[in-house]
Image 1 (cartoon, rainbow over the protein chains, first blue to last red):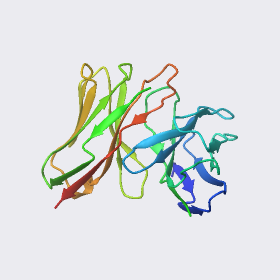
Image 2: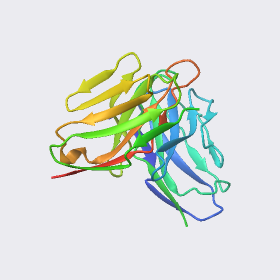
Image 3: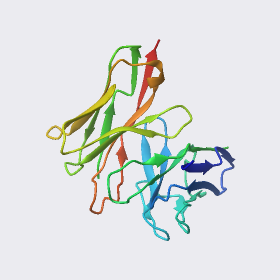
Image 4: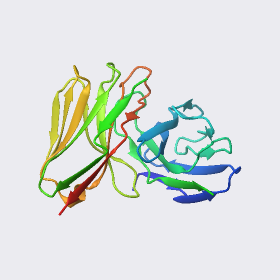
Length: 114
Length: 115
């Protein structure tokens, strides 16, 4: 079955540590996105990528980094510079970048900083 | 940039009643308005969307209306069922150009349908 796989589902991190969240899609989609979800704040865009080896900052990119070395993979690193990293992180993809169309989401990764 | 406000934040209805969720947007150039449903522990899933060249769209028990002049759009769910209980998000974007398909989401509405 085609879809988006995020891992791990739950992750605990100590303060000062970097952590990388995995996102893999087998939908052959060009565009991929990372969103952060906090209660009462909706989904906020962290980074997005239109094609391999290219990505742009979203609205809340500070303290995060990404890479897009392969079309199917878009990992997100939450660095120690992110002041409030505890949140639910959602990866999404879309077939055609720049066009309106359905975003397909993974099931999310919940990060808790201890 | 675009700003999307969504109301109410929580909505409780009895099974069989209708539910309405409203959103307003700020960017008059926005022309694509999807609605997503998020069940507990899952990622959001598109349930219906509307483009700015139409005023209303229906799909079985759900419908979306758009008022471009007032810059607001609404989700209507009729004959609600317990399985409609979820968090609903509205969103807005400019399709095409340099928008890169970036969606701005509302804050979400927790809908609870009581049997």
